[in-house]
Length: 402
Image 1 (cartoon, rainbow, N blue to C red):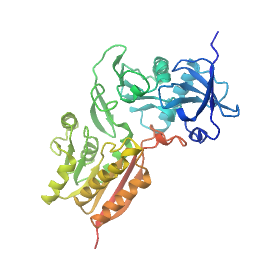
Image 2: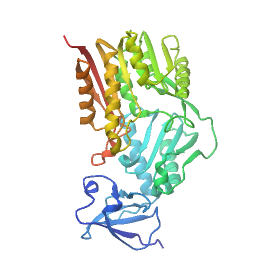
Image 3: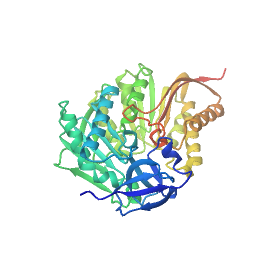
Image 4: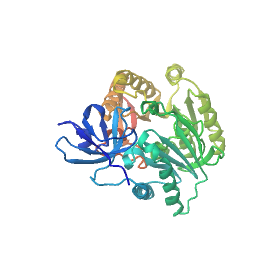
């Protein structure tokens, strides 16, 4: 017989984010817990007056004490329930994105809080960040393989990249390695007509940033016959999209020697080594040097890492974003294009736009917005769950003041 679930009661007036559509309940929002439980167990959640709010995983070691799995009061979270969530996630991807390589499970936005699973060709990479969902990881992966097999997609291997520091806050160890049989962790994928070797073992996060897929495609149409500068190039993705679109000359820059080595390999893989070059340098140091030399580019792309991962460091992040955008604009020839983005949730769209506006004013440039874009649809933005919305991507024409 299944043990009865503990009951969690919310303080009066609390859990506003949950009631607005979010999936998290914080430690300071809980009034009391009735019944026995272990961290990672499912619990039933009730408002202060006993009104049922659904069920979720509890972990008292985390500030995010409960992550909701269902809004229905009597939901049983079992293999059938997990398979339903996984199937829904796959059906959604088939309808919205190129599934050759894509994010299959995006945590809270797919109603499977705390787990991310990326598909790179025929390999899965999983990142599990919450204790409750970690227990269901084998079931989720099995369900995913079965659902994909129904569409004749055979997964040859699974690699785990649950090595983020945030696991420590959940009372979990950082884990990295094969789930099941070992395989070659260098995986070739193709996206927007560009081939990449993805290193799922040692690449950043899960090995490759899939969220910019259609932003990279949007840049292609600007680059034919043009001179392009791609800053924070990582493994060369924007630079290679520029190259494949027929750019005359592309320079990609990154501080990571490993990233630049992989980007150089990727250029060779696409037959672009003659036109697409990469250098290892600090972008903040390099941009003023290029300016001093009088360099000008038709297209400048700025794809920096998140300068802020908390509310406390937003002020410094604003300075960083203002500085690189200001420097980037100075390097765009009159009438050329600036593609700029922020992947930090804490850098809100309004604040990011304000920062870019200030940078343009400081260097006496007029900006004409071409496009405002966000993350690819395989990273869905769940309304009510603010953390699922993080990527801002803007394309501007940069004009001198005349």
